[in-house]
Length: 257
Image (cartoon, rainbow, N blue to C red; front, top):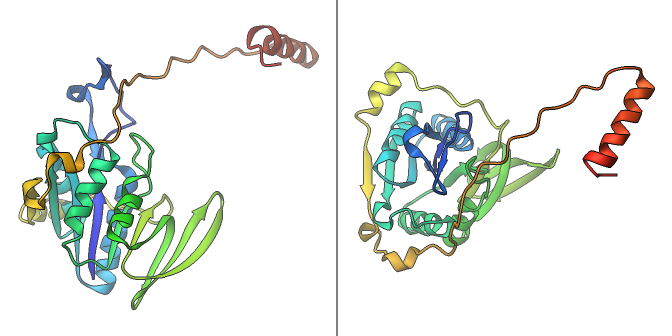
């Protein structure tokens, strides 16, 4: 099987994020593979091991993203491709990313493409569906189980606490949700092997694209951290007194009743 994974480099949301002049201070930020994309990489490796073929991980970014691509190779992917957009000077959005990925993938032979359900840095979940639309292939989002039987994908997907079962012919785009698998950690042998695995870099010229072809359709006008929450209050005394105090606080302080 020809298996592709679209991956994003994101900042680690478990670390402290600093906003400076409306932008994330990358000097103090820790960057990782988008956690939902780790489910996609793991599932791709499982499919490869079961059905044969190879796994190619593709991302849009700059040379800093090579670190995350090497991590994907250390997990077990076979090849990696960096679609370099450094010349765009950070003027990109979901349209830009999906257009570049589509331009690359349309010239590849693939049976299935996997991506994360959302990226933890913006939660939009737009890129994979846009790519599927651009390629003219079926798409199934938020999957929690995947089996390939010949030319058919049998899929279970999360629908707000319930499960929907779908069968669709290949090729197909799927986005992966928590619960699909447990992503592996790169092993020491995997890390050593990753250094020798192919990592290709392509720019817009290589994809026959001009900057105006992928010009962002949206503009970020500012970023800010949410305000710090006030300390909570512990109500004391008899239960009836606590209830009365709570009602008074909701009415006079919070003004919600």
